Length: 371
Image: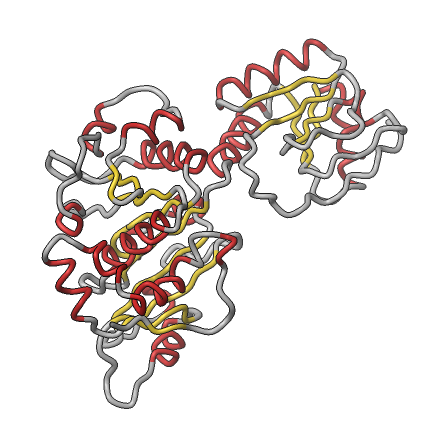
């Protein structure tokens, strides 16, 4: 096999919401059929070209190149991740090309069919423009649910398409914080009984809303742990329909590794009175692609401040939330959204919202949420 075209490193994600599209370049109809079956099984959109396009289409997020495609010296290399695909007879040539291009992957079919399917499926879970922020409490009673719901509500009031997902295994539902929805809609109990894939547009249309924010919680049934497979399916659909997806995951000790890997940010909500170790808050280990921050809540012990609590946990401080009577009263009375009429609370919540929307990313340092 001859020299391959130069493969450039992928550019930063544009966040423009384009659907996941894999472009396969090959003139081998047998190879195209084989890859198409794998892609279809993963629900991935696959386009096929017989020659490398020039320029590469803007909607392409992954390039699959057959042996004939990497032999074309005039072709411009794609600026997206690349997988070289072929059959056993192409093995040596494809690996030689990959050895000269760091980061390029190789899939020799049919033996690598399962790997390629998992790789495409994982990319599909991460697809979509919506930013996924997971709130997890260091212990119970730290205000994790309150802050997650408040962040999603504020995003909705700013005109952002937002969704709050109740994924706490010990949840009693979050309608107690919000009052009952003005209109009916489905909850986890309905989705748990459903079969088949969840269409993104369908999900956005069937969930109840509060102040412009969609809510997925237990609506009328007995709360129970949500199966991992359906949670991931919901998240994959949500990231295509919403700009901000906020997940209340309960305690950080119960965080699943897959949920952490899917998240753009994990915000650990920890009590000021119970400093913890990094191991207590990040049992699965911070993923390289996930940003971890800590939100300290409650009364600070004498001689202690929020940065020192964060340092004890081994996480960067995002915000300190002192005891706030207005928040406590609004939560207990089922009118949490009403506190957003208070300018100071509304301004301070922006520190949390900034980690739920890329465009709102705050400057370094931390803020204090107070009444």
